[in-house]
Image (tube, rainbow, N blue to C red; front, top):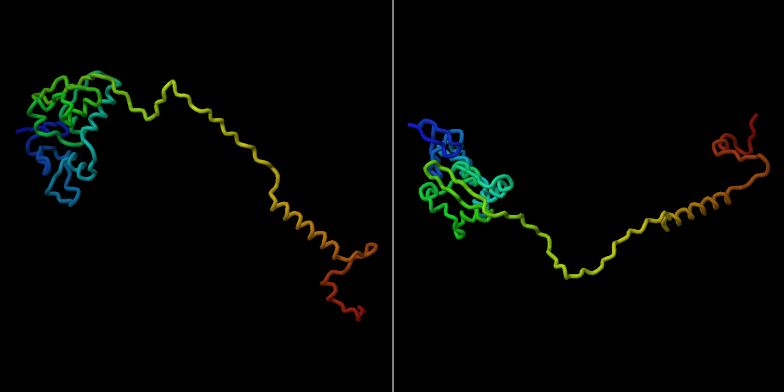
Length: 219
């Protein structure tokens, strides 16, 4: 006996398939992982259920389908998606009623799942439950929301002059000027305190004065 993996779509013998402990559907070994919270290898989850348990998302899970259809609207007018592809887009499994009844795929704006493709500007053209695929058709062009504030043509905006930056002056600050004047005053006082000798006579430095005393003369 053979069966199909609900995630990758491969047809394998029944012995190579395992049943997810959360959603109860059959998956191949490559599309399953042990329980990430307890690392219990006896409890196997599919990748969609494991992803949802690790990083739960707020809001509707069909928002990802809406974003996917908005992206495809720039290239084509019709999109064919299988059930396994839709499961991968929404990172979750579709309910069992989506596989059994065609009324689940009706374009009813009150349904949460139908708003996923209606808000993106798409409608369901064909729902083939036997072969397991859905054909979406673009009904209108949805523009991206702009957050710019709209202004009417009659509204007159007040004149706002452009701010002009004044160039910085190269004049020194008052602190630098005061320090310079203080240094000049100190130099003048130092020059006034030193005695001035006539001619080319220069006083002896201090280390020469210590060699000989004033009352003794060298022999």
